[in-house]
Length: 245
Image (cartoon, rainbow, N blue to C red; front, side):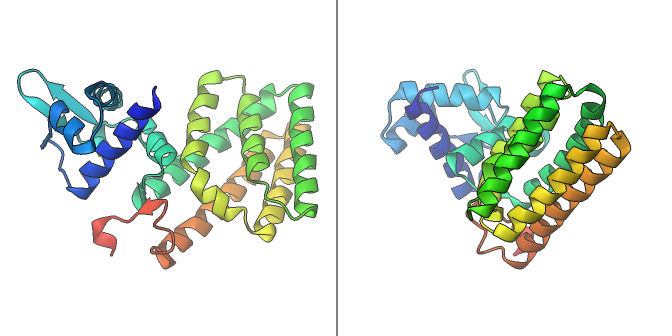
Protein backbone atom coordinates (compact mmCIF):
# COMPACT_ATOMS: atom_id res chain seq x y z
CA UNK A 1 0.00 0.00 0.00
CA UNK A 2 1.30 3.45 -0.96
CA UNK A 3 1.99 6.04 1.75
CA UNK A 4 -0.54 8.39 0.14
CA UNK A 5 -3.23 5.74 0.51
CA UNK A 6 -2.39 5.25 4.19
CA UNK A 7 -2.70 9.00 4.72
CA UNK A 8 -6.03 8.94 2.89
CA UNK A 9 -7.30 6.09 5.09
CA UNK A 10 -6.37 8.04 8.21
CA UNK A 11 -8.17 11.13 6.93
CA UNK A 12 -11.31 9.19 6.01
CA UNK A 13 -11.41 7.42 9.39
CA UNK A 14 -10.85 10.73 11.19
CA UNK A 15 -13.66 12.30 9.15
CA UNK A 16 -16.03 9.50 10.16
CA UNK A 17 -15.22 10.14 13.83
CA UNK A 18 -15.32 13.93 13.62
CA UNK A 19 -18.67 13.97 11.81
CA UNK A 20 -20.02 11.14 14.02
CA UNK A 21 -21.16 9.24 10.94
CA UNK A 22 -23.52 6.41 11.91
CA UNK A 23 -23.65 2.93 10.33
CA UNK A 24 -25.74 3.02 7.18
CA UNK A 25 -25.09 6.71 6.55
CA UNK A 26 -23.62 7.86 3.27
CA UNK A 27 -20.08 9.21 3.03
CA UNK A 28 -18.84 11.85 0.57
CA UNK A 29 -18.08 10.58 -2.93
CA UNK A 30 -14.59 9.66 -4.13
CA UNK A 31 -14.40 12.99 -5.97
CA UNK A 32 -15.57 14.96 -2.94
CA UNK A 33 -13.09 13.20 -0.65
CA UNK A 34 -10.24 13.93 -3.06
CA UNK A 35 -11.17 17.62 -3.12
CA UNK A 36 -11.72 17.82 0.64
CA UNK A 37 -8.31 16.30 1.44
CA UNK A 38 -6.49 17.81 -1.56
CA UNK A 39 -5.35 14.35 -2.66
CA UNK A 40 -5.39 12.42 -5.90
CA UNK A 41 -8.43 10.33 -6.73
CA UNK A 42 -6.11 7.35 -7.16
CA UNK A 43 -4.97 7.54 -3.53
CA UNK A 44 -8.58 7.95 -2.35
CA UNK A 45 -9.70 5.02 -4.52
CA UNK A 46 -7.01 2.72 -3.09
CA UNK A 47 -7.92 3.82 0.44
CA UNK A 48 -11.59 3.04 -0.19
CA UNK A 49 -10.73 -0.40 -1.57
CA UNK A 50 -8.76 -1.15 1.61
CA UNK A 51 -11.57 0.08 3.88
CA UNK A 52 -14.06 -2.01 1.93
CA UNK A 53 -11.91 -5.15 2.30
CA UNK A 54 -11.76 -4.44 6.05
CA UNK A 55 -15.57 -4.23 6.04
CA UNK A 56 -15.61 -0.65 7.31
CA UNK A 57 -17.45 0.73 4.29
CA UNK A 58 -19.68 -0.58 1.53
CA UNK A 59 -19.71 0.84 -1.99
CA UNK A 60 -23.05 0.47 -3.75
CA UNK A 61 -23.16 0.90 -7.54
CA UNK A 62 -25.04 4.04 -8.63
CA UNK A 63 -25.71 4.90 -5.00
CA UNK A 64 -22.57 5.81 -3.08
CA UNK A 65 -20.26 4.91 -0.20
CA UNK A 66 -21.83 3.85 3.09
CA UNK A 67 -20.42 3.23 6.56
CA UNK A 68 -20.90 -0.31 7.81
CA UNK A 69 -21.54 -1.36 11.40
CA UNK A 70 -17.88 -1.92 12.27
CA UNK A 71 -18.70 -3.21 15.77
CA UNK A 72 -20.61 -6.14 14.27
CA UNK A 73 -19.09 -6.48 10.80
CA UNK A 74 -15.62 -4.90 10.86
CA UNK A 75 -12.39 -6.88 10.80
CA UNK A 76 -9.78 -6.93 13.56
CA UNK A 77 -7.33 -5.48 11.03
CA UNK A 78 -9.27 -2.21 11.33
CA UNK A 79 -8.03 -1.88 14.92
CA UNK A 80 -4.49 -2.70 13.81
CA UNK A 81 -4.69 -0.01 11.14
CA UNK A 82 -6.06 2.54 13.63
CA UNK A 83 -3.13 1.84 15.95
CA UNK A 84 -0.64 2.06 13.07
CA UNK A 85 -2.06 5.44 12.02
CA UNK A 86 -2.10 6.74 15.58
CA UNK A 87 -5.89 7.00 15.67
CA UNK A 88 -7.66 6.52 19.03
CA UNK A 89 -9.26 3.19 19.94
CA UNK A 90 -12.36 2.93 22.11
CA UNK A 91 -11.84 1.98 25.74
CA UNK A 92 -14.36 -0.84 25.34
CA UNK A 93 -12.33 -2.25 22.45
CA UNK A 94 -9.11 -2.13 24.48
CA UNK A 95 -10.74 -4.00 27.38
CA UNK A 96 -12.25 -6.60 25.04
CA UNK A 97 -8.92 -7.07 23.25
CA UNK A 98 -7.20 -7.65 26.60
CA UNK A 99 -9.80 -10.29 27.46
CA UNK A 100 -9.42 -12.08 24.13
CA UNK A 101 -5.63 -11.92 24.30
CA UNK A 102 -5.71 -13.64 27.68
CA UNK A 103 -7.91 -16.45 26.36
CA UNK A 104 -5.67 -17.01 23.34
CA UNK A 105 -2.28 -16.81 25.03
CA UNK A 106 -3.24 -19.12 27.89
CA UNK A 107 -4.25 -21.73 25.32
CA UNK A 108 -1.07 -21.05 23.34
CA UNK A 109 0.98 -21.73 26.47
CA UNK A 110 -0.70 -25.12 26.89
CA UNK A 111 0.02 -26.04 23.28
CA UNK A 112 3.62 -24.80 23.55
CA UNK A 113 4.18 -27.20 26.47
CA UNK A 114 3.28 -30.06 24.14
CA UNK A 115 5.06 -28.86 21.02
CA UNK A 116 8.05 -26.70 21.99
CA UNK A 117 11.43 -28.01 20.86
CA UNK A 118 14.77 -27.58 22.59
CA UNK A 119 15.51 -24.86 20.04
CA UNK A 120 12.30 -23.02 20.99
CA UNK A 121 13.16 -23.16 24.69
CA UNK A 122 16.69 -21.93 24.01
CA UNK A 123 15.33 -18.96 22.06
CA UNK A 124 12.90 -18.09 24.85
CA UNK A 125 15.68 -18.29 27.43
CA UNK A 126 17.83 -15.95 25.34
CA UNK A 127 15.01 -13.39 25.28
CA UNK A 128 14.72 -13.53 29.07
CA UNK A 129 18.46 -13.04 29.51
CA UNK A 130 18.45 -10.07 27.13
CA UNK A 131 15.58 -8.57 29.11
CA UNK A 132 17.61 -9.00 32.31
CA UNK A 133 20.49 -7.05 30.76
CA UNK A 134 18.23 -4.22 29.67
CA UNK A 135 16.55 -3.96 33.08
CA UNK A 136 19.96 -3.76 34.79
CA UNK A 137 20.92 -1.01 32.33
CA UNK A 138 17.72 0.89 33.13
CA UNK A 139 16.25 0.34 29.67
CA UNK A 140 12.76 -0.63 28.53
CA UNK A 141 11.95 -4.26 27.72
CA UNK A 142 8.97 -3.45 25.48
CA UNK A 143 10.50 -5.31 22.52
CA UNK A 144 11.69 -8.25 24.63
CA UNK A 145 8.24 -8.62 26.18
CA UNK A 146 6.66 -8.88 22.76
CA UNK A 147 9.35 -11.30 21.59
CA UNK A 148 8.79 -13.53 24.65
CA UNK A 149 5.04 -13.81 24.15
CA UNK A 150 5.28 -14.33 20.40
CA UNK A 151 8.02 -16.94 20.87
CA UNK A 152 5.62 -18.98 23.00
CA UNK A 153 2.92 -18.73 20.34
CA UNK A 154 5.48 -19.64 17.67
CA UNK A 155 6.29 -22.76 19.70
CA UNK A 156 2.72 -23.99 19.08
CA UNK A 157 3.76 -24.49 15.42
CA UNK A 158 0.49 -22.88 14.37
CA UNK A 159 1.34 -20.07 11.95
CA UNK A 160 -2.20 -18.70 11.79
CA UNK A 161 -2.29 -18.50 15.59
CA UNK A 162 0.96 -16.52 15.48
CA UNK A 163 -0.41 -14.06 12.92
CA UNK A 164 -3.53 -13.42 14.98
CA UNK A 165 -1.66 -12.87 18.26
CA UNK A 166 0.92 -10.69 16.51
CA UNK A 167 -1.95 -8.40 15.47
CA UNK A 168 -2.85 -7.92 19.15
CA UNK A 169 0.67 -6.70 19.85
CA UNK A 170 0.45 -4.20 17.00
CA UNK A 171 -2.76 -2.81 18.51
CA UNK A 172 -1.27 -2.64 22.02
CA UNK A 173 2.03 -0.99 21.02
CA UNK A 174 1.17 2.53 22.35
CA UNK A 175 -0.03 1.14 25.70
CA UNK A 176 2.93 -1.16 26.12
CA UNK A 177 5.33 1.69 25.40
CA UNK A 178 3.86 3.52 28.40
CA UNK A 179 3.70 0.41 30.60
CA UNK A 180 7.37 -0.52 30.18
CA UNK A 181 8.65 2.94 30.94
CA UNK A 182 8.43 1.76 34.55
CA UNK A 183 11.50 -0.27 35.56
CA UNK A 184 9.48 -1.86 38.35
CA UNK A 185 6.85 -3.03 35.86
CA UNK A 186 9.61 -4.34 33.60
CA UNK A 187 11.26 -6.27 36.43
CA UNK A 188 7.98 -7.74 37.68
CA UNK A 189 6.99 -8.73 34.16
CA UNK A 190 10.26 -10.52 33.52
CA UNK A 191 9.95 -12.41 36.83
CA UNK A 192 6.56 -13.64 35.61
CA UNK A 193 8.16 -14.63 32.33
CA UNK A 194 10.74 -16.74 34.14
CA UNK A 195 7.96 -18.57 36.02
CA UNK A 196 6.19 -19.30 32.76
CA UNK A 197 9.44 -20.46 31.18
CA UNK A 198 10.25 -22.78 34.12
CA UNK A 199 6.89 -24.53 33.69
CA UNK A 200 7.42 -24.74 29.92
CA UNK A 201 10.79 -26.36 30.46
CA UNK A 202 9.18 -29.03 32.64
CA UNK A 203 6.38 -29.56 30.14
CA UNK A 204 3.86 -28.78 32.89
CA UNK A 205 0.98 -27.41 30.82
CA UNK A 206 -1.31 -26.59 33.74
CA UNK A 207 1.38 -24.76 35.71
CA UNK A 208 2.51 -22.84 32.62
CA UNK A 209 -1.05 -21.90 31.69
CA UNK A 210 -1.80 -20.77 35.24
CA UNK A 211 1.37 -18.65 35.36
CA UNK A 212 0.49 -17.05 32.02
CA UNK A 213 -3.10 -16.41 33.11
CA UNK A 214 -1.96 -14.69 36.30
CA UNK A 215 0.61 -12.64 34.38
CA UNK A 216 -1.91 -11.40 31.81
CA UNK A 217 -4.62 -10.84 34.42
CA UNK A 218 -2.27 -8.58 36.37
CA UNK A 219 -1.45 -6.51 33.27
CA UNK A 220 -5.09 -6.29 32.21
CA UNK A 221 -6.17 -5.19 35.70
CA UNK A 222 -3.54 -2.45 35.63
CA UNK A 223 -4.91 -1.06 32.37
CA UNK A 224 -8.56 -1.32 33.33
CA UNK A 225 -7.87 0.65 36.51
CA UNK A 226 -5.75 3.20 34.68
CA UNK A 227 -8.30 3.72 31.91
CA UNK A 228 -11.04 4.23 34.48
CA UNK A 229 -9.04 6.61 36.68
CA UNK A 230 -7.11 8.68 34.12
CA UNK A 231 -9.10 8.79 30.85
CA UNK A 232 -7.88 12.23 29.81
CA UNK A 233 -4.20 11.42 30.26
CA UNK A 234 -4.59 8.28 28.14
CA UNK A 235 -6.67 9.69 25.32
CA UNK A 236 -3.72 9.43 22.91
CA UNK A 237 -4.51 5.75 22.44
CA UNK A 238 -8.06 5.32 23.78
CA UNK A 239 -11.19 7.13 22.74
CA UNK A 240 -13.77 6.85 25.49
CA UNK A 241 -17.31 5.79 24.68
CA UNK A 242 -19.72 8.70 24.76
CA UNK A 243 -21.54 7.23 27.75
CA UNK A 244 -18.42 7.08 29.92
CA UNK A 245 -17.73 10.83 30.20
